[in-house]
Each structure stands twice: as C-alpha cells, then as structure tokens.
Length: 506
Image (cartoon, rainbow, N blue to C red; front, side, top):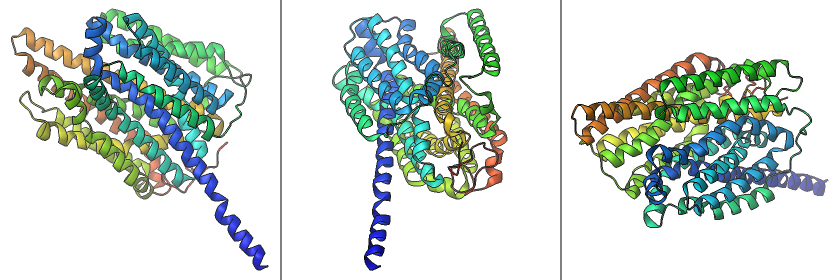
C-alpha cells in the first residue's frame, strides 16, 4: 500500500511537468515566429531614406517598399486562418516561417527596385501564413482561463515590444552596417525558429481541404481585403475620385462575399461568428485603437527625426523605453490585473491612458525636447497599450469555437492590419496636408512640420476616444460578468460568448 501510494504520488508529481514545459516551450516558439514578422513590419521604416538613396526610389515609389508587404499580408490573413484550420495550424505556421525567411534573404540581396518590391510581397505572404494561426494555436494550448490570460499577456508583450524594437534595430543596423542587414538578420532567426517549431509544436490534424474550402468565397474576400489595404495605404497619392471608385469596388466585393457566405454549403467564414458580441465588438474596437498606435509609432519617429533632429540610431534608442515598459507591465501585471478587475475594466483604463498620451503629444512644439515632450506621453501610451491589448485579445478569442480558432485568429489579425493601415494613412495625410499648407503661406520648414504632426497626434487622440466609446458600448457584457468572470480573468463561462472562456468549447 505504501509503495502504491508513493508511486501514485510520484506519478501525480511528474505527469504535469512535461505537458506544462511543452506548452510553454510552444508559446516561446510561437512568440519567436511572431516577433520576426512584427520586427520586419517596422524595422524598414527608419531605413527608408537609405533604401531610397541606394536604389533610386522616387517618393511615391518608396512607399511600395511598405505597401508591397502590407497588401498581401492584410489580404491573405482571413483565408490563411481558415486554411490553417483545414490543413493543420502547425503545418501552416512552419510553412509561413520558411517562406518569410527565404523572402527576407531575397530582400537582403536585392539590387533593384523591382526585386526588392517583389521580395517584400512574398514576405507579406509568408508573414500572413505564420501570423494568421498563432492565436488559434495559443488558445488550444492554454484552455484554462488563468493560464490563457498569462499566455496572451506574454504573446501581446512580444507583439507590442517588437514594434518599437524594430524601430531601434532598423536604426542600429542601418547606421552600423547598411540597410541590407535589416532583412538578412532574419535568416539565422528564421532557421532557429523553424527548427524549433518543427521539433516543439505538437503535430495537428486539420479537418481537410474538402471540409470547408470555399474557393469562390476565398477569391472574393482576398480580393476585397487586398484592395482595402491598397485603397487605404495609397489614398494620399491618388485623386479623391479614384479613391472613392476603388472604395466602392471594395464594398461591392465585400457584399458579394457576404452573400456567398450566406448561401454556400461550406462557407469560408461562418457568419454565425459575428453573433458573438465579444468577437464583433473586440474587432471593432481594435481598428481605431491600433490605428492610433500605428500613427503614433510612425509619426512619432518622424517628429523625433525631422523636428528634434535625432539620427537614425538615436531615434531607435529614443523609442526603447516603450518595449521595455510594455514587456514589464504585460509580463508582470497584465494577467493578474485582468484576473482581479476583469478584461472590460482593464481595457477601458488602457484606452484612457492612450488618449492622454496622444493628447500630450498634440502639444509637442517645434523647439521641444525629448525628455519633456516625448518621453512622458511615450510612457503613457506604452502603459495604456500594455493594459488594453491583452484584455482586448482575450475578449476577442473568447468568442471562438475550437473549430473556428484559426479563422478567428486570422480575423483578429486582419482588423489589426486594416486598422493600422487606415490610421497611418489618415494621420500621415493630415500631417502632410497641414505642413504643405503652412509652407505655402511662408512658414519655415521645422515649425510647419511640427504643426502638421501636432494635428496628426490630436486626431489620433480623437480616434482613441472613438475606440473607448465602442468598447464601453460594444463590450459592456464583460463588465456585467465582473472581474474573475471576465473572459481573460479566469472562472465563469461567459454567457454572452458562444464558447465561453472556461475551456468548454465546441
């Protein structure tokens, strides 16, 4: 009896260990792959002048170094999220890492404009393949609410920190070596991440392509999403009439896709997903929230360079406090704060801090300083985003049934890209228009540039106010459930969510 009890005790102590290690090791692999794609989406921004000088890009042509990546990335996320459910999410993730890494090498050795733009487009495809299924894999790995909240906090910290870290690395590599290395650095990272993914991630059997591959619907939605991103990112470089016509065509494609999904026997996107108030509301909130943060990241870097006169490396260094603060807060406090107060309350508090940070930046003058005019709002924005993003992610994924987690992940990532592209297009267009108008009236370059950026920051604050309003109204049920019963907080099944947040899915 004693021996049996000891054996049972030993078994109970040792069985959970490999499972826990495997799940958290898998999270590290997923974060590594995601970090690589996020870094590359931002690392190129500081290197743009060097790329322009080396390859002879015109001003409008240079924008395609970014757009060529964003258009396939944003357009394919939804389709690839669904295909990940059908062919297996591990298979899709590892294939995406391979494509992304190979395309990064092509970008790094590019010697012409056409080669770089084509390689960036392939990078966008690989980035979509690797990113679209990650949240679905994470939810499947951590079905228990409190652990899931911790895992989402870690994943969100990597994503948020990666954006600002990309700005730093872009400046450091470009100044120390040359712009080619912002892409070539992905080769060793990609190889290690791919080998780790193959070894660590559990094999997964998809439902099969014959069970849900709506190819006409896929063509409609992919075309609509790609055209959406194209309309947004190029809006400042074409006449208003052309933009409106393209927007009408985009809307027609979305309508055709919706009709197709309502009638198809095996739709690509089950419209019942949008019956979840959590899923629909979280995606609606994410668009203006991410739009605000993207606008801050890009226009803030321009303010530091063009108004304060920082070098590429110093600009990257100036933004380092953001990923440090985001990482520390998300890893140390996010899951516990959400568990205590509920995802809804934490999200609202984070959005209030984001509004305050953008409002402070709205007064950044032409003769400003980094310590007084940039660093305080930078820390406010980092703190707000560290609170809001894990809470919002948890609320969004709480509305996913297990068979739809890949698709839900793809949808959530899609609204991120659309929101970021839209925010960047709107704020950069407003800033450029304001600056050009002042220059035409004889205002000097630096004051005119600063006023343009001030207008963009103030508009960003208003966009964040819209996100706060949407969250307060659309996600109110999270408050009604209270702290520990909120989706990311642990406990409770979430009556307003079809799947709940307790691991009881399907």
